[in-house]
Length: 272
Image (cartoon, rainbow, N blue to C red):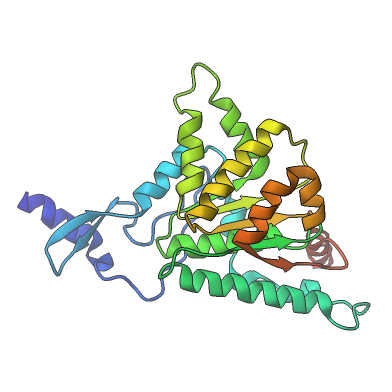
């Protein structure tokens, strides 16, 4: 036992004290980021009490294993608040600088949410709406990466993938049940639903989304939602019951730009 403790001390002694600023996670293709708290050891050694405890990343890894599409892709792992480039929202045609002001306001809300979430992981979430290519997913991924570095359990899923994962549990060979997936989405500390868009929703899919959101609303668990729908359009696709929950449980922010940011990035690269 003493030998094991000695090994633990040697391997993660540098992580025994929680740093004020955690290092960036290292992305690896097909794998979760290296945990900045335990360096993927799964345990953290507390030198003050001479005890080892499980790291919070273990629950996060269980989430990844339950949802095949819940992993933040290598591309999205690079998203951060520092890389949210406000210059993409500048336009000579936008005389009132509405696009830039909206983006700056949304960015500030995202930063403030993450700053307070570790201490107060309940209450209102955020709702980002805007056209395709306006930076909604980038900002949501930046939030996910920031929260992960703080040790907050998050589930980041694209809505159509979430629904496909639930459907896949109906296969008789599935090792995970529908209840497992829905319960995970309902109870995770922070749920991020990306692309709640104009999909071909059925009564079945609407009911699943409502079940998740209604539970989180009642339990005051924050949810981050990105969508290209307005509130009125959301009511048409998801129904008034689900839309009402979204409005009640989130604070809404509009992202807008004259041109698709992905296209702008491509054009900037082409000029180099």
